[in-house]
Amino acid sequence: MLHSAKARVTGTPAEAARDARRALARLARPPGGFDASRYFRGQGDLAFYNVGTGATRALARSIHHAHADQWSIDDALAFADALIGDRHLEVKSVGIELVARYRRDFAPGHLAVWKRWLADDHSANWATTDSISVSLIGPLLLQHPELASRLRIWARDRNMWVRRASIVGLIPRARRGESLDLVYEIARRLHADEEDLIQKAVGWALREAGKLDMPRLERYLRANGAAIPRTTLRYAIERFPEPSRRALLQATRIKNQGRTKAQGPRLRAQGSRTKAQGLRVKDQRPGTD
Image (cartoon, rainbow, N blue to C red; front, side, top):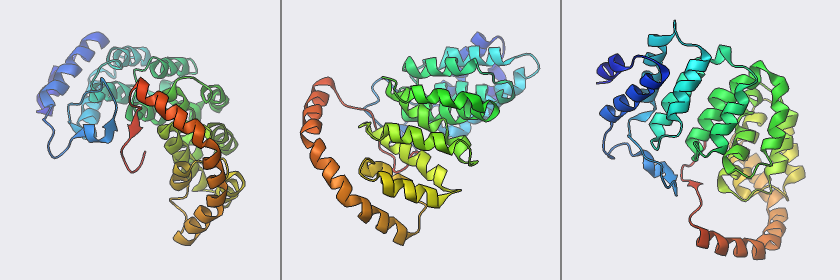
C-alpha cells in the first residue's frame, strides 16, 4: 500500500505536498492496536491517521529519493510549509522528515523559519515541537554553534512551544557534551515555568546533559533543588543509580515543600483561571523522548 502511495508523489513542492496528504489518507487506519490520540490530551484541532512513524519516514524517504536531483533545501522548505499547518500530526511529520534529509544545506537563516512554525502554533503539540527541535534546530546548531545563544531569548517567549524548543533544541549538542553551560542556564530560566510540558522538557535536557558529566548534574540539582519542579527533577535523575535517585529526591524534598507552600495560593488562583480558559495541553506519555 505504501508502495502505491510512493509512486504517486511527484511534481513541484506544492504538488508533492498534495500527493503526500493523499498518500497518508490512503494509509489511514482506525484507532485500534495503535491509537496516537492517547498520547495527547487537550490537543483541540489535532487529528491522526494512526499510521505510525515508520510509514511517515518511509514516505518522506520516497519523496526525497524522487526529487533529490531536482530539489534544493528551499524546495524542501516549501514542501514542509505546505504541510506544517495541516491538522494531522502525520502530515506535519512528513514535512519535517523531508527537510531533515537536507541537513547538510541548513543555513543560519532557517532558524527564523522554524521559529515561525513554532510561534504560529503550527506545532501546537509536543511531538511536532520536538521533531522540529531535534531534527532541524539541533543539527543546525551542530553546524553553526554560534546560533545556540539565540535560544536564550526563546526561553522568555510568550509561546509555550517556542519555550520548549529553547531547551529541546540543545539536546543534540548536550549529547555530545557541547553547550552544557547554556543548557544549565536555560534550564534555570525555565524552572519557574508552570507548564507541565516545559518541566518535562527541562528534565529531559538535564538528563541528556548529565550522561557525560553526571557529577555536574548532581551538583546542579542539589544547588538548585528549591527552584526545580518535582516533575523536572524526576526526569533529570532517571539515569542515576537507585540509591542516588532516592538521595536526591530526599535532599530536595524539604526545599521543594517550602516552594510548594509559597506557591499554593498563586497556583489555586491560576487553576481557577485555567478552568475558565479551557484545558491545558499536557503530555500523557511516561517520557518525552
